[in-house]
Amino acid sequence: MAASFRFLPDEKDHEATRLLPWVMAVMVYLSALSLTGGILIHNGFGNWTESLSNRLTVQISIEDRKERTAVAKEAGGLLEKTPGVMSVRQLSEAEINALLEPWLGEGNVTGDLPVPAMLDVQIDGRLAIDIRALESGLHQLSEKIHIDDHQKWLGHFVKLTRMVESVALGIFLLVILATIAIVIFGTKAGLAEHKETIKIMHLMGAEDDLVARAYQKRFMKHGLKGGLVGLGLALITIFGLARLVQNLAEGLVEAPNIPYLEMLLLLVLPVLSGLISMVTARITVTKELARIM
Image (cartoon, rainbow, N blue to C red; front, side, top):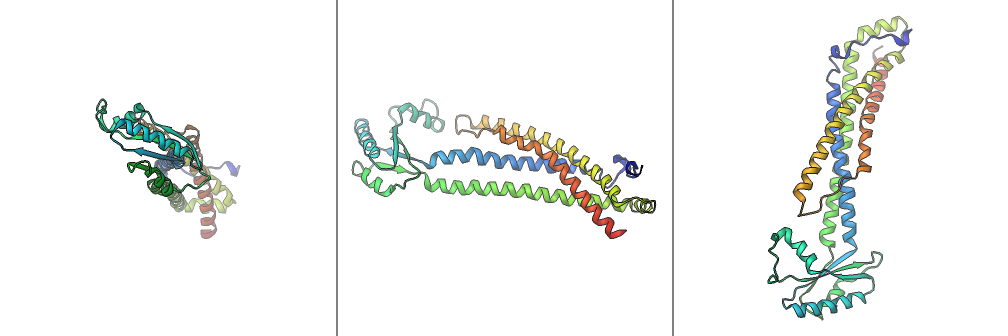
């Protein structure tokens, strides 16, 4: 009979935690956005940098078309004989034009424009290639051959992505800590509001577990309710931004695709919000009752 006794007022009349679901919604909203940013950066840009890390780009900037074609063929043969080079492919004029059109405008890449020949070189990542020695050998064919190994700017880009991932994870952890602090504050406020009622219940034989279960049930409900609202708003924001980015990036850069499988992790956030609220409320109530009773 005591287990079903209700001593907490209706949620609308509970001043200490009336706004808690909306606070939890904001917390889950921020958590979802930070996790989504981390997932997109890790998957999208991680795969992109990995594909570039095992590639070299060789440019032949000779103005005369016949000489440029001949030197490109000789350079390709030299590269194919180099240990560690897996394949060499010369980009066609159509491919080079497609790379230049987003920056120069459609139809502005004409035959009068001195476009360099480009070789896409795939290398074996397990073997170290002396880029300086390779470039020195190519310079014997022409001084207008340049090798771009992508490593200088790619290394800075990898550091940047890792920093952004760490910031996203840090924001997620800070939101969890803030959520715990808010639940502790709300629980203590609720206990202070009903301190006399709880004392009378103890005199009637009620145990601390009864009070703790009442609070943990209510706070779990607040966490789940706020979590579902926050997740819904976050999904609307995420897919709205993704659509906007794809429209803006069309023709300029390839926008990262949304990893829908990893995005399923966001569905755990409302459950996590409810569990954090429930466990925090129970621990807080147990400690407070042991202190004041």
